[in-house]
Length: 78
Image: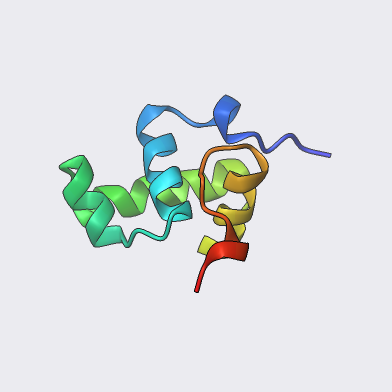
């Protein structure tokens, strides 16, 4: 099975965008926080999805929780 550990596969910008996506941030919010264009963030996230073999934000959140990249706990969401 392919190791999908984001800590090993992603660079610093990709990791930040990955973590923010896992915590529910939108593309626009990520772009504003990182000082990048939404197009650049979209490209970053495409790279993240390819490297980690994920397709959607739910998969990103699950992977982030598994590897301790986010403190988001789905059980505590309202």
